[in-house]
Length: 161
Image (cartoon, rainbow, N blue to C red; front, top):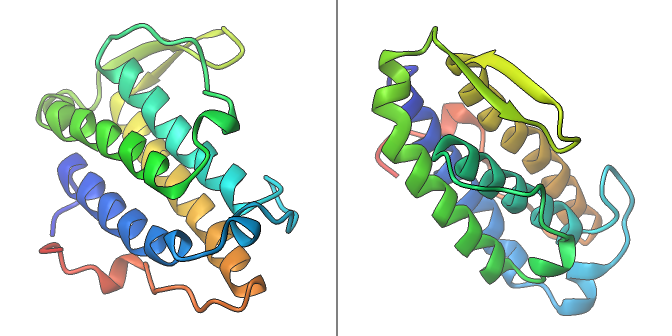
């Protein structure tokens, strides 16, 4: 594995797939139970992760976007997986170009509508780090529900998954 945008996306896809699998097995009551944290439930946390990935994919593809979708638009794991798959397709498509231009800047509007400019390498690292941060929260919520989460540490990913 190399520290490339393509490998970071592949790792993130693998880790999300692995961690969402036990979430898909939960009852609707467990999935929406308010457990506390940055977001009140697994549903809200997973909806945020999927919505943010989709939003970033629209930004990177230079497509119109209006902000994060409401949590209710991503009510279940299947919908979250579909939004994530759409985002990964874009991330994988732009990765070679962005890797070659990693020090060039990218300008976008944040969710408050403020124009931001950042280096491309920082945008990709943010996308990956954002997912890692929230996967930790999801793993903790699964533990609160008595479910042992799978290991998604980077050191357990071999690049062929």
